[in-house]
Image (cartoon, rainbow, N blue to C red; front, side):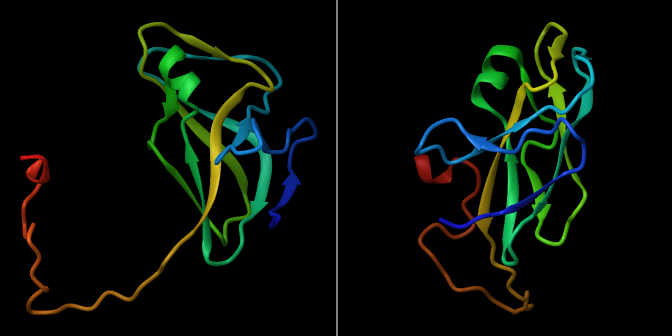
Length: 145
């Protein structure tokens, strides 16, 4: 098992942790002094109190927690947050309220999940033609016919 270095940038920060032995994502926790309300249609930046040293060649991906999204309507505003391996600042989660009522986020609440994943950074080369495939330029829904 590999490790990721984590620095607490706020004294009451909680390190990411897995909810089960086979969980893919580690929970990220709200590092707040008091509860914060996220109004309907509002986006609020929630600090986690941690900074990460993501391995070179990897990225940290911040996803919604399914229970927060389905039960409270709270999910990352940018859908998937991307933390580059050279970023050393505090991890923030921009929570957006897609629901019909205001929602409170309390100190220590699990607010998102973090996956560390390898990334490819290929060079992009302009060409006159691309190779052909059976699908070709078929767009949205074209493979479900």
